[in-house]
Image (cartoon, rainbow, N blue to C red; front, top):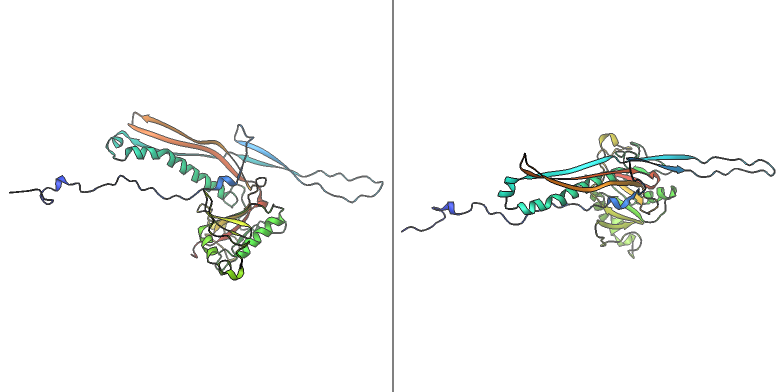
Length: 321
């Protein structure tokens, strides 16, 4: 008498079982657009001019003599829509017929394309103040304004961040007449690690009442808030620009250093301007020749560094963790 066994009837057993779950890739949180001054009076075309006017001069005056008249300096800032991006994919009719995951796969196309474009936009925003930006800080230069450096290498051992860098950034912004309100530091995770292990921050002997210098354990929706140091709200981002070999600065050089940003997020002095001419727009159609459904999301925008006085960049080494 014979029965069913796994050895003699393996063709009745599925050799592989697939879960109904789909594993999603973990993604970082995006924050860049909240620090951009969006230009709203830009209805058409791809270039707009923003005039600027300088300060008035003061001259000595002598009674019963002619007053000296001086023209005020003027300038022009040119801003353009520079980026036209797309994200696209397709699924064939055969794949739709045979795939167990078809419905969930197709439903993910549009949000994932929108997310990809948002990430691209974030990277473009955060690179603007750096040498990689179209109007960013100058390579291999301290970018001094009103006698204070606005770009330097982290003053900690092995080119990492130090408390002195926060104080120096505050001094530089103050010297440039930047309002000391809504101060923000966007730093690499390696910088947050360094701050979290600094003895004079975590040790209560330097901060006995836990007031002013550091606040831990706080969070904010939509961004990774870490702490407050010398008035700067510190946020972490993995999308900061990393120097290329041609963007080294100072001695010793930080060849692969990441550019950590320090600025005021006061609404009237935001350091970057931008315009999203076309928000992410989705199009889809069936390609009868290739028997597939095609999905494409496009976006058109531009960003540019606008206020160099309201930006300090501290270049730090990322391989010390």
